[in-house]
Image (tube, rainbow, N blue to C red; front, side):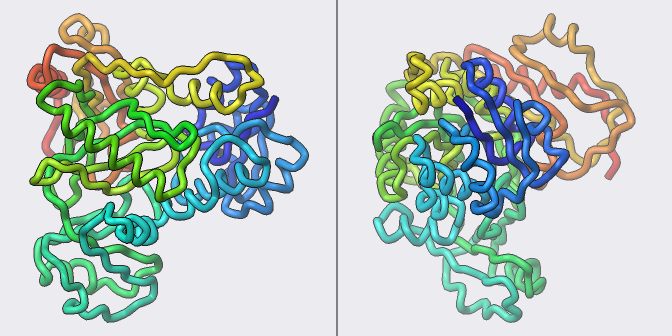
Length: 400
């Protein structure tokens, strides 16, 4: 039996290795000949994964049993097209085409009453958008219509700010969306649709930088209690309804949501794939006990005759924190062994070296390559204390 991976970035390696452990032969496809996942697979093909027809030319000879669920952006659509062509268990092309397009995603959910803020499309090539046409409540969020990893997302507080700092840069070479900002704490959701029914695996609280970028630099595991049970239940119901509208049937999802001022969940976006940023491969299994990629492979390929389970148990307060230092030079990196002696560390991965300059954290790409650590404590308050203490172990020089 063969598993295909479409998009062989470094974030595909975990799924490739899991599939091999389960006895599957893995073939990887990517347009970049240096894509790290190509080296990990049993067979590799350099091909433009933006073009499903070119992918079909290869896979028609391979007859895959499953497309591995991996973090990927816009061209998740090719995964959907492959699933449709070979009648595989997984997300469809139509569903991926909606959830990878922020404008279409909003339009479809708004029509069903599942998204209620204003959103305006700024088409590529448009030169003089009239600020009066954007008749909404400020502040607003501006983001590219396509893409992931928080690329190009900014907040503007007034029409004047939007005009001078964004619209003055027209024409742009890609579409942008301008939407009403929804205030409240942000969360991430890991889950799965099985035969059209949604199951929550992990609710993650986000630790964000201040506006205008509001980049996530850490995630907390959220333990369900009597105090937050209502929000958990509302979130599960909302994601289930949205998935029904989007056409999700058998696929992993991750979503970004906000708890609004009324205590209700608001969907920022949903993607029909596992989360990146060392969540699906590390933090989610640590916090929930569910290796969602491995379990999905077992579910999607019954010929493996492996029992699967998405039953999660989230009873630990955990945090994954990324190294979000800004405008500094690293003079000294703490000793890993000493850190494990002093703090309740579960994992440590630090790519920082003395002499490195660290700029502003504006998106995922600007921080994720630096590394991360995971800790466990009795409460979120203790997690913050330990996290700040660990970050203070670095010797840094202000370079502003």
